[in-house]
Length: 96
Image 1 (cartoon, rainbow, N blue to C red):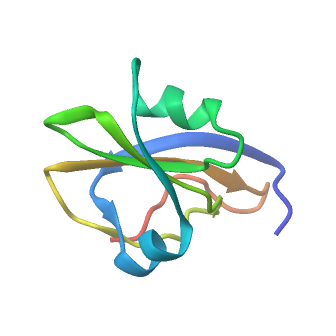
Image 2: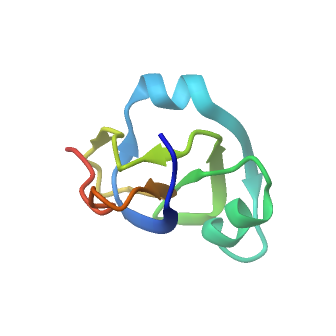
């Protein structure tokens, strides 16, 4: 799908296991935050971290097209990513 634009969004939870296995790039300790770390890595489009350890980031390569990624509820983890959006669909609805 062609992106008309993209935006960064985040929410509590973790990507489903198959996503994590297929698109994992690296785990890094950041000096700033995981959003900044992901934005500075050319292949990174999604990141996760534990709420209690926000300096340890897992980085993933897959771009989320129109938010078609399943997020598993978790109050201990945060997931954020760059969402590919087209003019006809909303960017902000992640499935639960």
